Length: 144
Image (tube, rainbow, N blue to C red; front, side):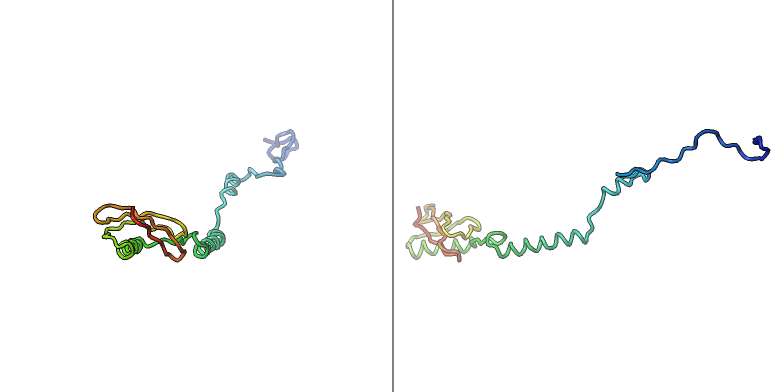
């Protein structure tokens, strides 16, 4: 097509020329698809996780070993308690006792009580045990 001026140039469409819309003033731009999703899926770096978790784990470990009852609750050795109860029944109370059974790992708490069972002269009896000191001393009651 030729222009009326005689030059061989393509003709331009007549009418107003529109420019692209300006970018928004705030908020995410939609010019880049997925940009919004990438911003939300931020991953915690391993160094930052270690920097936060390391001191927390160390604090729990130190408190657990220092603060009584947090991680290191004192408990009795069940076999030692059973031997001790049997010794008291035989030597102190002068009873024909054997086969003492106590609960597994009772706590060493001053004033706490637990019961053991024992065979005294072939008859099953219950023996009350009371903790008397924090270092593991206990008192054995008379069998009932």
